[in-house]
Amino acid sequence: MPPPDPHLQASRRANDSARLVLRGIALNALLAAVKFAGGVFGHTYALIADAAESMLDILTSTLVWAGFRVAARPPDANHPYGHGKAEPLAGLVVAGMIFFMAGWVAKHALHEIVTPHQGPAWWTLVVLAGVIVAKTWFSRRMGVAGERVGSTALGIEALHHWSDAMTSAAAFVGISIALWAGKGWETADDWAALFACVIIAFNGFGMFTKALGDVMDTAAPKNFENEIRSLALAVPGVQALDKVRARKSGLSHLVDIQVRVDGHLTVREGHEIAHAVKDALIGSASHGISDVTVHIEPTK
Image 1 (cartoon, helix red, strand yellow):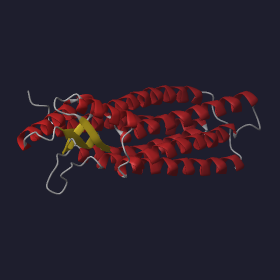
Image 2 (cartoon, rainbow, N blue to C red; image 1 turned 180 degrees about the horizontal axis):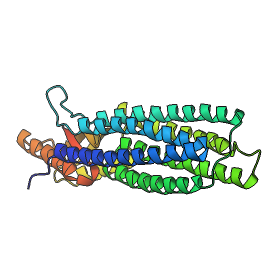
Image 3 (cartoon, rainbow, N blue to C red; image 1 turned 30 degrees about the horizontal axis):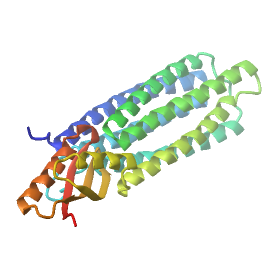
């Protein structure tokens, strides 16, 4: 039985990821409207800032969706290895936007701190509680999906939703303090939003470096390389391995491996072993390998 088409599998993973991102866009649109209304009528800048962040999230999520749609395209004459790089490139842009949003919210939070304003309404806590639950749930769902398909962009999108939950949680704490302490503590939610920005920027840096690593063809983790070695060594006729190189390309990996075989084998026999190694690696669906280059070397 021939191994499944790796490019078709990668395309399916990209399309499934794109649909999940679309659900996130719909969630952001709904929550942005709720948070903006709550911020205006509840007299809390933290909710208005949250709403603005959610509206910007819609733009960045659209970029991620477009990245997955491009990554789902099959290889062509100009892109013989496929279009997988579109996925980490989209993630790189979104990670940069996380920095921008953290700075934007921090700037306006500082402005609100030095500007006298009315204290928040108690019912804004109910709005924030709903936002926190919805965003935390969707962030976990997207994070699990990202780990399952090996998507850096989905991981960054999960961080994006988690960042929303963090700013809302900070606002919840700040508003609670403002309501409990009374007059003179109206800026407590603004200080809370400022604190959340630091956490968001720190996590954004981690996701930025991960996306940059994918774009720059950083080597795959050592445990992934060891699994490749185990699969290749299990192929009949393979006596040893030399170099094993693997890099991530979107939602799949590209592998370059040197295999040592009996030097007295015919060219055809060596070719058959090379094909068997390639089929074994690509056939391991859990590893998401879309292409393998096998170099045959004779044993001494």
